[in-house]
Length: 228
Image 1 (cartoon, one colour):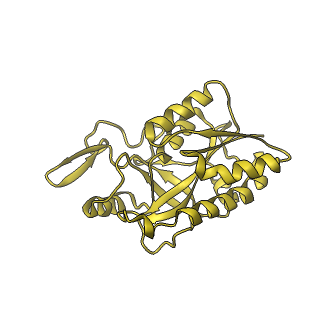
Image 2 (cartoon, rainbow, N blue to C red):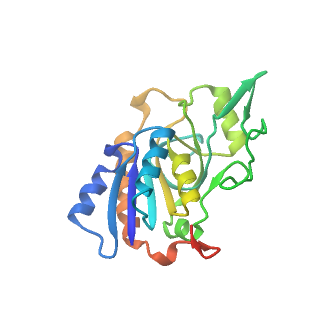
């Protein structure tokens, strides 16, 4: 089984890269990809990789911000869905998405009510991680009104800069995938002394080292005769 382990930045998965180089997976071939931060670099990196190679599974791992202040810093989630939350227009003190503006169909493949839902439910369950809804943004959220909008509109708990890129490309290319995020900070808090960067990265890599050896081909959901 061929697995691609990706992250926006090298330091997010460096401990696991070293670990699996020293302790190779018995039944899996593991490759690594650093996409760069942001939706466009991540989407391009995944598309370019898939143009020459077709892994059985892509895992995107990284730290993320929490929209829910009750979630403890350092907790790790598998993301059930993601979306591009800030693609649209703000007018009359109200934000409207491309779907609200009728510029895109919220239920046309790969969208499901405006979200990019991971269809590999067996795979998500295999991680034994708590599931979360994610949003991907181009602008890191600091505005309280916008943060509240994201909570109400998308019922999201986790924010990142790249998650939707993985979901979009993998769904379109029919490749099984996981997005795994560990909470490093609360959205809106820019004082990094109140973040948990080192602890979040440590927890993230502990989970990766636990999860990867457990994954089997049978965990990948097959829909319509195709692996998704």
